[in-house]
Structure formats: structure tokens, C-alpha cells
Length: 78
Image 1 (cartoon, rainbow, N blue to C red):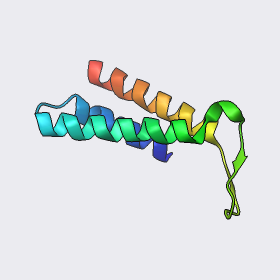
Image 2: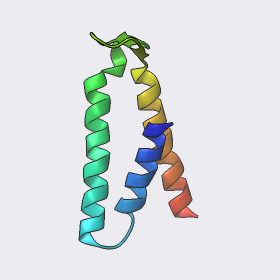
Image 3: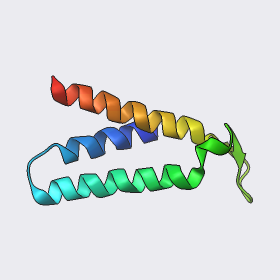
Image 4: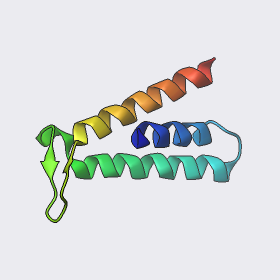
């Protein structure tokens, strides 16, 4: 559940006052989006990484990030 948590934290920073706070939030969200892009979730549900003993689930990371941003946006509207 790391990806939704990072997305929520970034969204919370983006919606707070202060240029530095919003910049940090935007950079955090951009970094997360870049990571999701490098994982290429459109290539399949599971991927192996050379040298790792586990598979990664890039689609789960992408979906968790989207759900995290949506939940954070709903919370801010309240």
C-alpha cells in the first residue's frame, strides 16, 4: 500500500498553502508518475526483474496510485 500512501501525501502537499510545500508535493507526484511509467504497466500484470527473486505488479502500483489520488481529492473536497 505504499503507492496510494505516497499519492495521498503528495496531493495533501499540493493543496496546502506555500510555494515550497506545493513544489515538494508536485515533485513527489511527478516522481511517482515517472516510476509508474518506467514500470510500464501496459506490458502485463507481472514482470520479473533480473537479479530479483520476486515478481513486481506494475498494474497494481498504477491502480493504487490512481486510487490514492482520487481518495485524496475526495477528502480535500470535504
